[in-house]
Image (cartoon, rainbow, N blue to C red; front, side):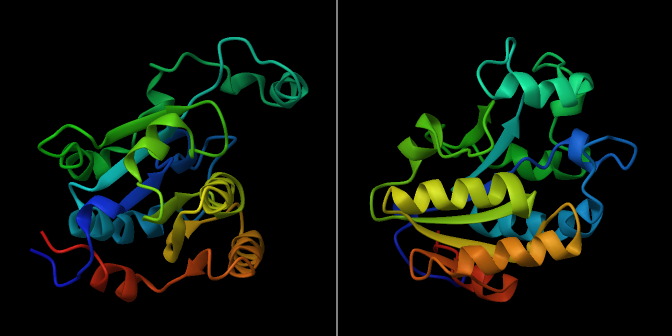
Length: 200
């Protein structure tokens, strides 16, 4: 049991896109400080499981609309969802295995969009609930998820020590922007996020 409080049904952790394609330093989409956040992310998963969800970004089979010119710039990313590039990094595999929960509600959310606040994640977090975010990248998929969830009336907490951006300046800028949405979105230290994990 964790030391935190709150209603477990209303509080969920979402681990955003901790995948090989963003962790591999040779990837075109590498996030430089990805290795440094693996352990803080694992700590959060251990604290919040089974109320924890991993998300996976994958590319669409056929890009549409503005995604067409986007993927014209990143053609190497257009690989099938089952490609190992989209797998959660091995360092978090054991943590991921503990997230499904006894009722099978947790697990993994797969999306072709930057924001992961779509059907599956929205179904898990009750209206008026709390969503704790960590992962990559702060300035893309994390901020996109945070703002869409906040618009839906969800209290969002972002853990900076467990997030990484494309560079330090972009990471800091994204955190600053998200902080402007308080109290809908809060930027909270890792220690506070761990202490607030629901008791189980």
